[in-house]
Length: 260
Image (cartoon, rainbow, N blue to C red):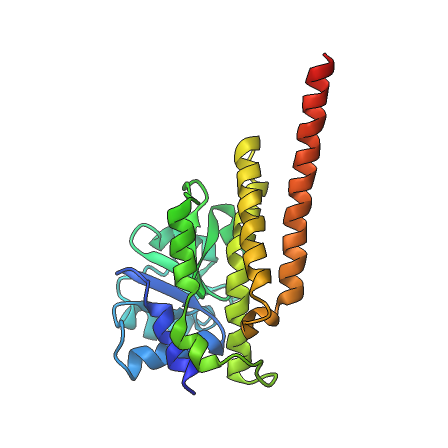
C-alpha cells in the first residue's frame, strides 16, 4: 500500500537529530519500520515499541543492544508483577532520557504517570513530549509550523479523497490523520484552561476557536476530516461557548464599574 511508506516518510520528515519515537499500534510501527529497514531512511531515529518494553527480555536482549544510548530505568515498563524484576513507569523513563533526546509519541502511553511532569504537543501525526514548566509560544511561527507539519501531500495523495472501507489499514490511518488535525486546536484549548491570566486565556480560546473553525470549513473536501466532523463541530462549539461566556463576564464587569 502506497499509504504506508507515505505515512512513514512524513512522520520522519520534521524530526530533529537525536529523536526518539515511542509507539504502539500497527499504523505507526509498520510504516516507520518499513522506512527504516527497507528504505534505509532516517536510521538515526530511535523507534521504541512500548508494548515490547513491558517484557523484561526486550530491555535485556534488544533494548540495550539496539538502543545503547537510551536509558531503561528498570527491567520492565509496567508489565506483569514479578518480585525479581524492577519495573518502571513512563514518567521515570521520560525523566531518564528527556535531556538527551527529543521525544515524540505515536498513540498513547500505557500509564498516566507522565501527566505529573509532562505535556503533549501535536507535531504532525505525532505528539512531542514537553516538560510542564516549559513555555510554549503559540504565536504565528508555531501556527505556521504546526500547520505545515499537518500538510502531508504524499499521504493525502495515497489515501485519496474518499472514505476507506472500515477496518483496513488506510481506514485507520485516515482516522489518525483526522485526529491529528483535531489535536492541534484541542491542545491550545486545554492550555487556555490551565492559564490564570484572563487576557492570555481569552487569546488562547479565540485561537482554538479559529483553528477549529478552519477545520470545520474543510470537512466537505477532506475525507480525513469528514470522519471526525461531529467531534470537530462539538469542540468548536465548546470554544465559542467559552468566548461568549468570557464576553458576558467582561460586559458585566464593565457595567458594574460604570454604576460605581
